[in-house]
Length: 116
Image (cartoon, rainbow, N blue to C red; front, top):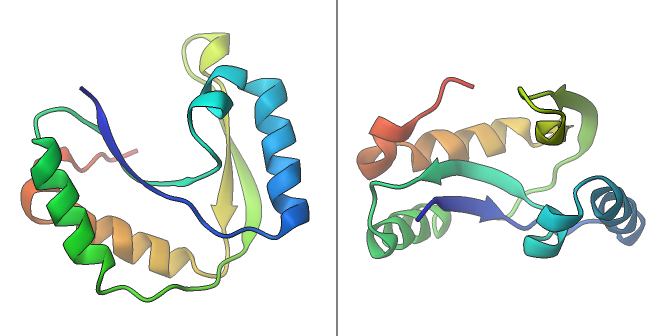
C-alpha cells in the first residue's frame, strides 16, 4: 500500500472554492478521493503504517501552525496526458513547508527522499 503524508491547510473560502472547482473539472477522480492538500511525503511502500504515523505525529506536534501564500503555478506533464498536474507553489511559508518536508524525511523516511 502506498502511503503519503498530507497537510490539509485552512484556505480562504474563495480560494478553497476555486481550487475545488478546478480539481473537479481537471482531476475528478483524485478530487473525489482527497481534498486540496500539500503533499509532505510522496508515496512510500516499505514503511509500516503505524511507524509512519508515529514518525509524522512526533514531528508535526513540534511545529506550530503557520501562514502561507500560494504565489505561483507549476505544470507537471507526465508521459501520459492523464498525468498532467498543476501544482500551486508557496511563496510566504515556503521555508516552513520545506522544513517539514526535510524533518519528515529524516529517520525512517530518509531512504525515501525523492529528488523531484
